[in-house]
Image 1 (cartoon, helix red, strand yellow):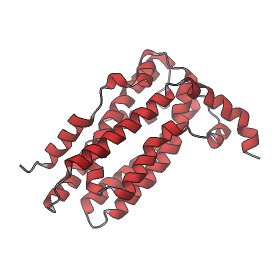
Image 2 (cartoon, one colour; image 1 turned 90 degrees about the vertical axis):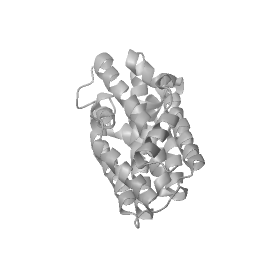
Image 3 (cartoon, one colour; image 1 turned 60 degrees about the vertical axis):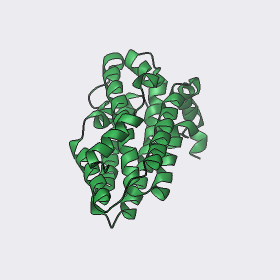
Image 4 (cartoon, helix red, strand yellow; image 1 turned 90 degrees about the horizontal axis):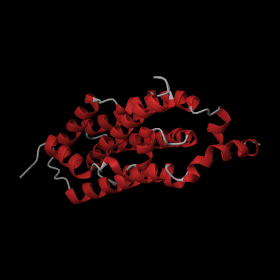
Length: 238
């Protein structure tokens, strides 16, 4: 049986979206027990992730140049990363981060495994299969950001501007969903029969590395990291 584009994406989201209760860090933010220093690390790591993901999406768009719907999906994602980056400065400021700390911060390996794998997908995966795996992951990421948005306002007194970064990803984007459907449908129309094993493998690894990001933030080492960056800043800048 040949599935429709909607069925392909719904199946991927259903099979790959993890249990939200397994995210220790987001649960702590929702409860107000995550230390402010760990929120700062979240913001600092995101600056590295956003830049990397944007370049990965642009590369996937280039690879899909012969498939306009797929190219449009990844071009749209890259544009979204640019918009998200514009909102990140307010989050950094709310976390008490100055320009020197942001500049000199050295990211944690556990937080950067996810964008490293997105880069791998940009080089190796069939672009349409990457569309499916990423769409499933975005569903989980959006839910995490929605929980953080509520927790940051309720327990940490963050303003709307400070929450703008997480709100951007937490807000449903019907146009992204439509672009994903168009991209998958173009693959189906071209006769591509998606390898469910490959898509599941890509999606499962994305979810695993996503959770690794959050688990790293939940560790005590993440709390110490902004202070270490400030101490090292004068040396790093010389």
